[in-house]
Structures are given as C-alpha cells and as structure tokens.
Amino acid sequence: MHRCLQLAQLGEEFVAPNPMVGCVIVFEGKIVAEGYHKKHGGPHAEVNALNILPTGITISECDVYVSLEPCSHFGKTPPCADLIIAKRPKNLFVGMLDPNPKVAGTGVEKIRKAGVNVSIGILELQCAELNKKFVSFFKQKQPFITLKWAQTADNFMGRLLDSRDLPRQISNKENSVFVHKLRATHTAIMVGANTVNNDNPLLDLRFWKGRNPTKVIVSKSLSVDLDSKVFKSGKCLILNGLKDGKGTNLEFVKLNDFTAKGILRALYKLGIQSVLIEGGPTLLNLFIRENVWNEVIIISSKTTWLSGVSAPVLNAIPTSTEVKFGDTINYYKN
Image (cartoon, rainbow, N blue to C red; front, side, top):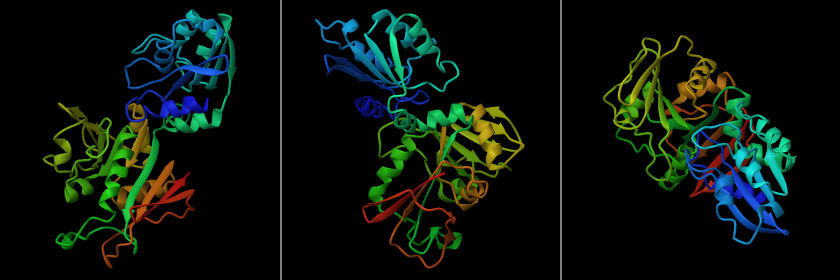
C-alpha cells in the first residue's frame, strides 16, 4: 500500500477533480504490475495495472492493492468494480472507502457479493491525507482552503501605492517554482479585486507542469478592471454582488453573502474542490478571522522593507518548517 501511495501522487497535478489512486498487483509476494490514475478522463489505476500484468501470470492467483475503493459508477470511464469482478483476483486490499456518495462503499459491496475477498483500511489515514482535498469536498461539503502569502522579515507583504518604484519581490525568485506547484495542485486560485487592479497578475502556471487552476476574483462591487491580464486566458470566475452571466472564458457569479463561509458555499456549488488563496490582506484576513481554512503556508524572507502593507497575523504554531533558497516556509494545519 505504501507503493500505491507513491504511485498515486504521480498524478497529483493532472487528475482533479478525480482523486489520486495507485494500484499494485502482487504474485507470490512480489510486485508484478503497477499503475496509477494519470489524468482526468484517462484510465484508472486498476486498469493501468491490469493492462501490464505479465503474460503467464494468472490474476486469480494474485493480490490486488488499491489506495482507494474501486468506483462503481459510469463516469468518463467504466466502473473499476466491474473490472475487478471480471478478473477475480485472490484478494483485494483497499486503502480507504471512496467518500464520493456515488461510490461510498458500493464498489466494495459489489465486489464482495461477487465472491472476491476484500480487506479495507490498509494505511487508511495516509490514504485520506493523500486525497485530503477530495475528502474535504465530499465529507465537509466545502472546498479545501489553503492560504498562502510571502512576507518580509519585518512582516510586510506588499508595497504601498506610492512606492511602486521600489523592489516588489519578497521571496527568492527560485521559490516561484514552489508557488506554481501549489497552484498546480489546487482546482482554483483566488484573489480580490485590489490584487488584480494593483498587481495585474497572470495567476497561471509558468514554472511547473500541470493544468492552470480556475481563476476566482472576489469583487463585490465589480470594481475589478476587466482589461487586466488575468482575464486574457483560462477560466475565470468573478464573485460579485451585482449580476450573473457567462462569456467565453469569464463567468459572473452573483453572491448575497460575502463572508468566508458564503464564498465557500458558492464555490462548493460550482464543484470547486480546492482553493489556493493568494490575495491581499483583506481577503486573507477574512478567512483567518472566520477560521475558515485547512492549511496556511507562509514564505518569510530575510528582506526588510521598513514600511508597506502589513501581512496577516496568524495566531498558530507551525506544524512544520523548511528552508528553501534562504526563505523560511512555515506550514500550518487547522
């Protein structure tokens, strides 16, 4: 099952909104085939593993390990539960049940009724941690929220409007790769109108492989500049208090509740499983104040500015810390 988890993570940037899944086939105590879910819409882990089972090895004499319960419904691919039943391995070991109500134990039940021996809960906590965003969406019925910002040694995260001639980069440029990997592993990235109007960011992937996240802009009064670079490409949502509407790649979503929980309810209805919030202090403090977050990542540099826009204050103890290219990165879990 450890190997299943290693394999599953290889699909992290490409499988959403599906979960990461790994599969290993064992014959006489040795791994003889393995696979993982490589991209959304592609074959699932079980299919990829079974497709490379060496000739001469009978699946009925093998044990199959899979990190997540085989699906039991038709989506973009046929049910893996039916495939397991057709192949009839000696034993099936499942890391955890699928929290998606379309599956939620029905895959295992179907396989057991067909006469295959099934064991559940192998490294269950590790399997749940791997797919924490997927699990949060279905169990908590809200997106998984990650807050991220960079701050100077004297706790500033941005320049004042009259200081545009001063350097704006806080963290080491090498850590842009780290930030873009974070973007690749979230369904959406969210900022406020001020961040768009003042910084004119792209909010896409340029330094890491993967799919660009959906761009979510919070602009209650629609003060955001629609000519900004962020709207030139990729799917964009503007959460606002004035109108609904759809364009080619831009959708206006009208909200009545601009609390953090209200924003999350709207994103959940839109099917967004995870959000990386990279906005300014107003948006970040909204989620901190309401305690609506799962993880916080703070990149602290050794740079001092003496003045600027103050970074949020998080009254929490880091769960882990690392140093990358001279910057200290603190991780927090809620």
